[in-house]
Image (cartoon, rainbow, N blue to C red):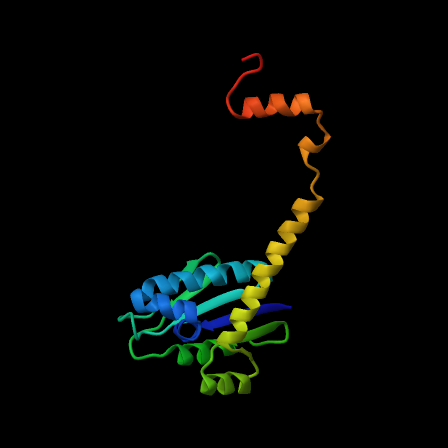
Length: 173
């Protein structure tokens, strides 16, 4: 079963303390940081992601682009992300697809839940991302511990010679 994750971008930025701090300096940097964190998460989970930013900070026509396998949407002027998500989430709902909407907007959560999608608060999404990052770090640590080290089986003289080569000295220098 595949999963589509809709993310209300500015809602999540406003609810993640570290992104809210960045936003005070630069909304573009906060968006970029959110997208980087989501990219790692979707790569790990295998979800398809659609991140929606409403036109409150970017004026003009609706635009869509791809970034690290995520669809990024900026809604048209006077259209909020909630409206876009509600309208498009229905397009993906079927027996073989889970739709999850990440937002802390209570009204949006009830609206989308009523349509059959699952909801994930911004806080819950952050917890999942942090748990995923921790799991990845643990997996890497386990791999490194299990990987045999070349130098562990070498005699001391060979280790010394290899170390001199590594430092740019030739044997017999």
